[in-house]
Image (cartoon, helix red, strand yellow):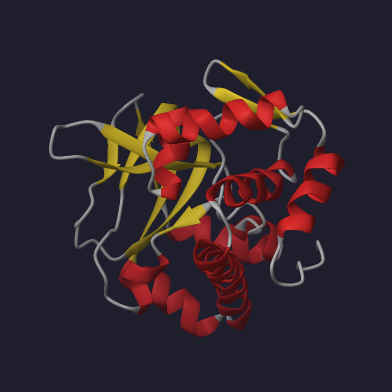
Length: 228
């Protein structure tokens, strides 16, 4: 599942000049992980920036019963851990390798030395953080205003800009919206019957993006934001 709430956020590597990307690699330690191996635990007090070097990781948390529910997937070029550097906060999620992967781990002190010397790095991270915050603020406003089926459709549309085949389990999608798997199943079934989506094993495919966008726009209670 791609990150449904942050699908428009650029990758750090796309915002940096080559020399600065190389400088980050020089101070990073590339760590290899096997499938299902833990990269970080929720609550870890471990300042540093992590960049997916190759492969993918899933972001989520373990429940008290030991079950793991994923909220997003990060791929090569995606970064995480900024809040540990600038706000001194612990890790909020347990990051788990999704297949074999490699992560560039950059310790806090080494990162801050480069950060203080390179304004372009600050600009890139600020851009990523603000795009993510923008998406979350929009999601929170929708939470207060829109019925659940419209919220689900809107998030699926945003994610479709990245890929129309969204690799997500029904239970993970339900977790994103804080509802039961049964409730999410009913919504997806209705969207499928209306010809907007098609459900598959571990994925939801958007069939008619334009018509779904029109359906959402008619149900918006505030003017929709123009796509970027």
